[in-house]
Length: 128
Image 1 (cartoon, rainbow, N blue to C red):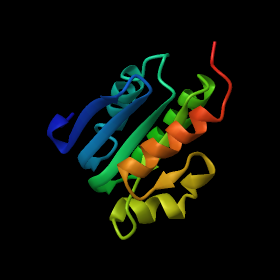
Image 2 (tube, rainbow, N blue to C red):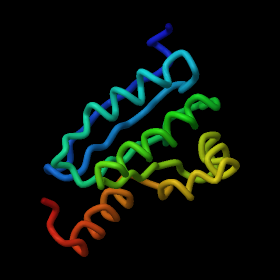
Image 3 (cartoon, rainbow, N blue to C red):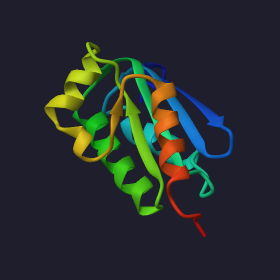
Image 4 (cartoon, helix red, strand yellow):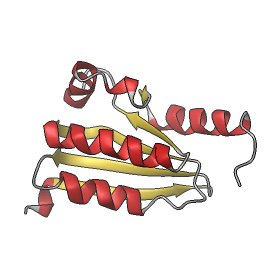
């Protein structure tokens, strides 16, 4: 397993949103571990998680599968998942082909994704 293929940086925004920034390549050798690392970083108190793929240079089908799995897992905890994949990037095209936006919204930048989670949180009743 080549751990140098992918970089994962986890950032907590306030207490509500976790941002996971991925860099490098997301393939079968790192996808499962990467998904676990992201899921483990999202506390139950978080409203949502943003996976930033803006600097990801490559993603194969195992990376796509990891995202769909993460969407199901986050949704089962009544949390939101948003993925950042700027238009024109290779990962953006992959997500379009597999119609990932049916599982979770895809945004152009991190700030927009975080703002959308905050907006949706404000319009929902308190969790408890």
